[in-house]
Image (cartoon, rainbow over the protein chains, first blue to last red):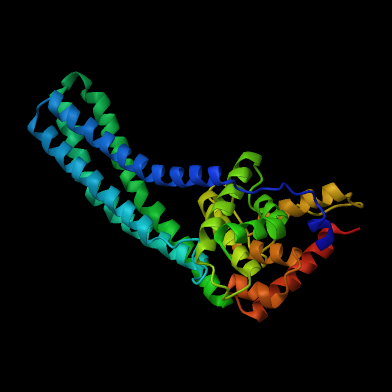
Length: 173
Length: 162
């Protein structure tokens, strides 16, 4: 079986210095892209609040922008604390799963409590500022609330699944 | 030795094994190419800290499997995986003799359905890495490596031969 496996034709890959430089740039760019996406969301939210001045809408937009900022900060922190595949001194698979469990658990309250109040106020204020679009906005609000409600059991299930895998790894040591 | 020299040595000695490793973790050709590049990039970066505490082969396999395991964890929602102790899908069950290509194809199908750790053990076993080194690379006890290899041999013998 080993000879069959090792006897298959293999594609020879070697990164050139140019390709390595490109990949390093791409790695740095992905961090900037994330920040750019968060800034764009904040601009759109505050832009809507500025176009349709309404107290509820402004309060919702402010809370929502803060919520997005906080979630973004937590995502960046989680990425920073994530184990590196380059670190051969640690049990990477277990460390990676622990990091993900922590993130799933945190997201339970992060998403609900950091984004829900601002989101709900924002939609209510938007509907009040644009009564003609209110039915459409209420549908969006209902979808937002359903999505928030679904996130909790989904995150719990994901955290439980990862915990089971860690227990299995612990059993093997 | 410098990072670039070590990388040259790795590509010369383990380049083919890394290609096979990437194939075992990703069936899609484009994604596989990206994964292989990610593995090479991670190895290149890691070699700047290689101090010779373990063999270069052990070091490279650990980094490569770490990157591949991370890739599997990202993709696992799309593809449910199973452990060696569970009932494996009948992907390598055949009626008659297999030609080389079909046997390989079915072996890949089987490997790609395994959990990362089981996959790591089976791949190292197929690369003729001894049980002690598999234990060192995967971080599982020698007894568990032996049990897993025994189970792998049984599966391969019963499902892919004759």
